[in-house]
Image (cartoon, rainbow, N blue to C red; front, side, top):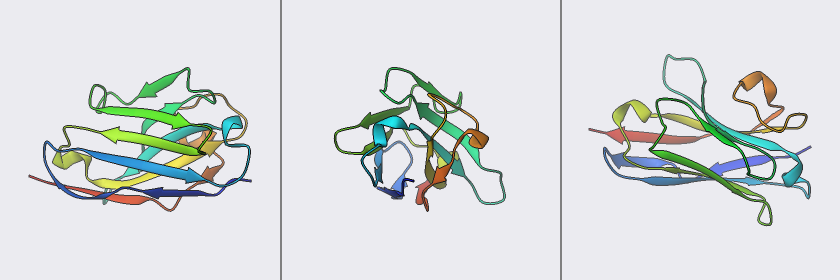
Length: 124
């Protein structure tokens, strides 16, 4: 089992950047594929980005391609999401998630563990 804790959210103006982090407990972080999802008020949770266990494969939602960068540091048990050129429509609670059985997934059904989320609010 792994426990996840996101941090790094906040209130920022459009065009600026944030770096979201997700700290994982346990010694087996490198055995989990990881992903970022987000949920805006009144909307369903949506895929943002995902990364394979060793970081060799990454994927992004079309809406964030070219602006967001996912990475992981397995030695530090930490997942990151660099979010640049933020837009008001990026406002959401951002969740990290861990997949035990897959090397990569862009579907929330593929994830077994979830963090509590960190709020990102982008003002225009």
